[in-house]
Length: 236
Image 1 (tube, rainbow, N blue to C red):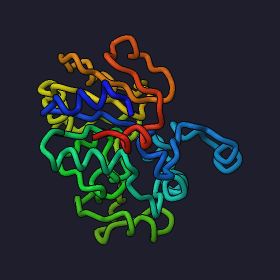
Image 2: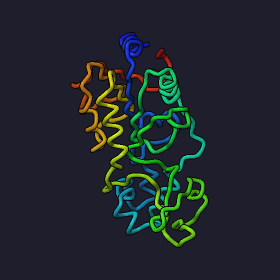
Image 3: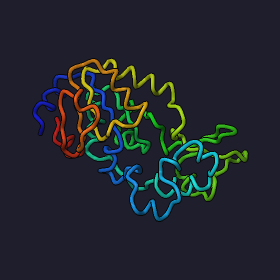
Image 4: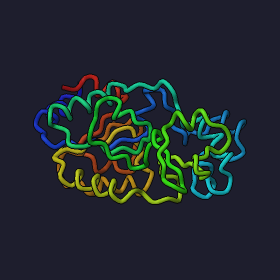
């Protein structure tokens, strides 16, 4: 166990956790930006192109072919990091989770105050009438999923080229500004504007839990290179 991190947690009352894809990879959800041979063999475009607003509007059926195959992961369960964060919230020492992930695993673990910067695959809506559809509807549909009104259904995820939800951003900003400890985990801090939110933290307990270096390592008060699930499973 990292003794400094454990001590800081015991001393803190307004912890905020800011996480990325590395939090969920230990639950079996791959980071889609890791372009492997399978992507290159099966798709004519890189993931970043497919997961863009322009591509969704222009080649919707091809978007959904990738989306169903790669973004709707079934059977994923919260790992020790998700579970520990939910436990801290229940104990009253963690005020919010700010996540770049779209898998809903924080809520599945029991976290209540979760700011999903990039939306969620669990929510979908009709672009014409606004009717809600769950992820099962998308998974079981074929081609371009349609609403009963005839409109195209869109996942409630922030695609490349789209703006973040203003209410979600404001809530995340307020939580980070008021935090007495900010733990950043499982993210390369390379995706903006999300990564820029950590600049709002003004405290002296900025912790980075990531297996590789990030552009913000020089700002951190503590860096932990252990796998995030292992790290959190050992914390009080």
